[in-house]
Length: 193
Image (cartoon, rainbow, N blue to C red; front, top):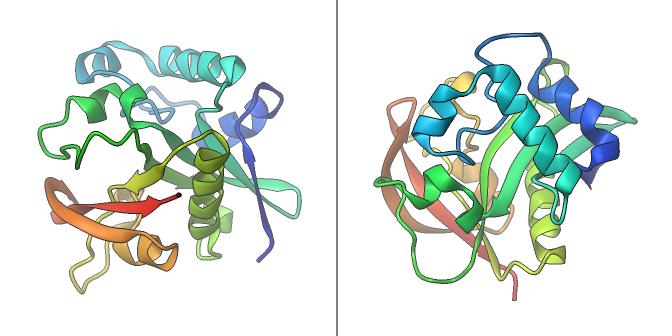
């Protein structure tokens, strides 16, 4: 697989929309669940969440995520940002900070249906790490699910799996109280120094 991963910038907005809103729905998250407080997220419509993400993409500095391309066609998205910019994460009672290091956080992956099973999420993770590195991150964290020897429901694996993060050089830091598909999620970190 030859996945090209690029920052989600204003000129790539249509590609971000193709991944995050493949069809119009009142439930479209627009990958804003971690960027807003729970209350703000719940009060916004899908269109408002999309407009908010678009403003982040257009503002750039840094881009709020990365897009992956296979053979020139957009295949997926990964949300990556400084942890301090992710309101729901900074106020989380289940995913607590490890220390005061100004880490960047990878919170979710979206891979278009026709590109699943091709390693796109793993490629997006590598691209997210590089995006964080270029923008001065000392480390990147992820909060993937531990499959605990089973298979995770694909719709609940948007946070990634521990195996995927380990293959990308992340180390287990600690188990959290957060769960996905009734399985624990872990804080995993990759130092960039």
